[in-house]
Amino acid sequence: MLSSSDRFLTTHAGSLPRPASLISVYAGAAAGTRPVCEDATFEAEVETATAECVRRQLLARVDIGNDGEQGRESFVTYVRGRLSGYAGGWQRPVMRDITAYPSFLAWRMGVGINAGPQVSLLYTPVAESAVRYLGSSAVDRECQRLLRVVDEQRRIGGTSFRECFLTAASPGIVAAAMPSRVHASYDEYVQDLAVQLSGEYRSIVGHGLTLQLDCPDLAMERHTSFADRPLADFLAFVESNIAAINVAVAALDPASVRLHVCWGNYEGPHDFDVPLEAIVERIYEAKVGALVLSMANPRHAHEASVLARHPLPGAMSLVAGVIDTTTNYVEHPEVVAERIEKAVAAVGDPRRVLAGTDCGFDTAAGMRDVAEDVVWLKLAALADGAELATRRLFGNSGEVAAARRGLATSSRAVGGA
Image 1 (cartoon, rainbow, N blue to C red):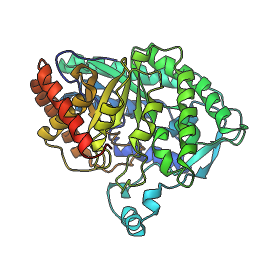
Image 2 (cartoon, one colour; image 1 turned 45 degrees about the horizontal axis):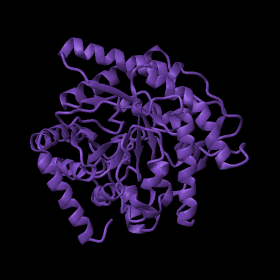
Image 3 (cartoon, helix red, strand yellow; image 1 turned 90 degrees about the vertical axis):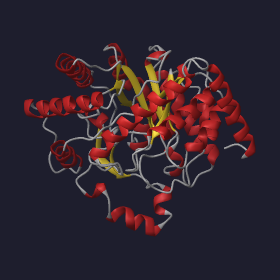
């Protein structure tokens, strides 16, 4: 994964707004009213959406960009078209912080951008027969489309990404969101998924792209599937999923893989979230080159101090979430710079820190909390803040050391995380 010795690079966590026409297609298919017809017309529409998504990222000065997941219905359920065996559906547990407060639940159901068509992640398919990878043709088309669009944007506008990435669902989130009725145990299922999905991951890296593994299971499942179980059970689940990741990426250079941890990309109380401190050492066991962590939202903004107490492994970088993806407030560049500075103080080396977003902006088609226009304003603020932080921190190791001392003092004063 690309790093820089002279400035903070910007990136984001994956999904970006899809056009209404694609949302309608994906929502209809997910509801079972009509299938996604992946014919020439559909492919042309996805290509157009991808081109616009790339153009808007470049206008916002994103350094490491992607296709915004324009060709997928969601960050996880898209795999049902790439793995055999999935059918039917089940009702996913609702996040504990949503169900715990009836007035919030009523408000959430009645207002907001989510009122339109969308793909639900609470009713998902299940494995009803053997799960087998159907081959790389779908992911190859995605990679080729992204590279083709980026080349065209370079030809037209003279600008390009410094690096491209593509997201992929981790074995653990697939197993958690789309359970199996044919495997003898969860561990058997997640290990099977690791083997089956490894070909998908190799294809992404083989096209010269950075692979981002999306792993909300490593945090969010604590207040969903494991809400009524002991913490020890959840930590064992995390360990199992990290082991599966390591099987899936065993053939890849860790530097080509980054791992995104998420507590759920929705506006809510989040007061049942597992603390980063409880899971961070287990996450460090993943054979990846970078972690993408939420560090902007009000529940987890303080957790940079966790990285000061539990230093990143020497070969890892940090993509610090410095933009909140669940609020329409546009962060001031000074706020973004301060968040970057806080992350650098925790890590100790600005060359190991990139500036990113807490999560995606369109996790499933139509499922977002931020208006489309505001998404692009936030990404522009990300670039502005990264420029401010660059001027302050690169080439000034004394300021980095002072900031690190200040963070350590602050952490002791509040008694840690």
